[in-house]
Amino acid sequence: MIILRKLLFPFAVLYGIITSIRNFLYNQGILRSYSFSIPLIAVGNLSVGGTGKTPQIEYLIRLLSKDYKVAVLSRGYKRKSEGFVLGNKNSTAEMLGDEPFQIFQKFPQVQVAVDVDRKKGIEQLLKLENKPEVILLDDAFQHRRVKAGFYVLLTAYDDLYCDDFMLPTGNLRESRNGVKRSDLVVVTKCPTALSKEEMKRIIKKLGTTKKVFFSTIVYDDFVYNKNNSTSINEIKSKEKLLLAGIAKPALFFDYLKQPNDDVMAFPDHHHFTENDIKNINNKAKNKKIITTEKDYVRLNNHTLQSDIYYLPIKSKFLSDTDDFNKTIKNYVGTSTRNR
Image (cartoon, rainbow, N blue to C red):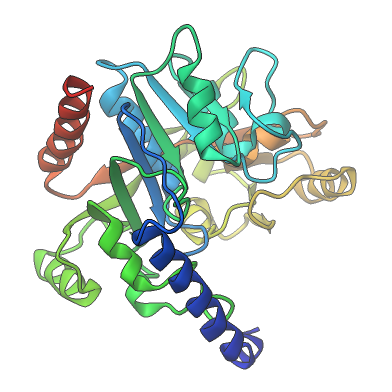
């Protein structure tokens, strides 16, 4: 795979040229970007997957939903519906996509919608009788047709954008110069004991003048299913099957895995087939199955012979939490007052 990526280097150069031309056309106003009077916060990255966008979106929901009517707009990656879809009581992961459906179930006070065309999606949300006061744009950093008022750029601690290269040789969707469009940068999935010296080294390495924050993933003390919960300590002490279909499952597996546990990994956003379910049942052999929230919403409607639980996660800043919160709230408050 590594050799193949190196062989594709000329295509990575070509892809980089194409994306740079596209960004230039938007920057010069030759291609039009649409702005809206409502506060729009775009959360995204420069690379493909695995930077923790959903935990960051959920953090912003918790931060803002007490004071504002918040909506989340996503493209609904790998959903089986088309056009604009607003989450409702009949929604499924197939209709919204796994991550939007997870957010929809978790935050009933928040409107969750999907549309590949974010401009049309925003317009549809603003036509609602109970229209939102703030819209969070999930994975919209490269969606230049809409100009958000505030951009949060994520980059993973173990896969910084400055160490990466353009697709298909690397995982970058666009040049690292894209960081200039951000309002702040969050280095995600950091070790909890990350030192101040290491933070300074990373900031220097990123080569940006934007404010840089550092966050980590915090795991819940319990795993959950429809009917009950079990403590992590109890779960870790028992044999189980760990299952994940996310971009980078290593942290999840490492946190829970014990010597006698089995592991099954699937591609990110994987749609589980009947054959997959058969293999999962054979592997589990009536042991408990522990999976991620995102996978749980896709597996929950399948017939599994074992109890299946999910482990919730949250994003937590290692320092400067008040500074981050104040920056976001100041943008939303100022934008709302100026409408």
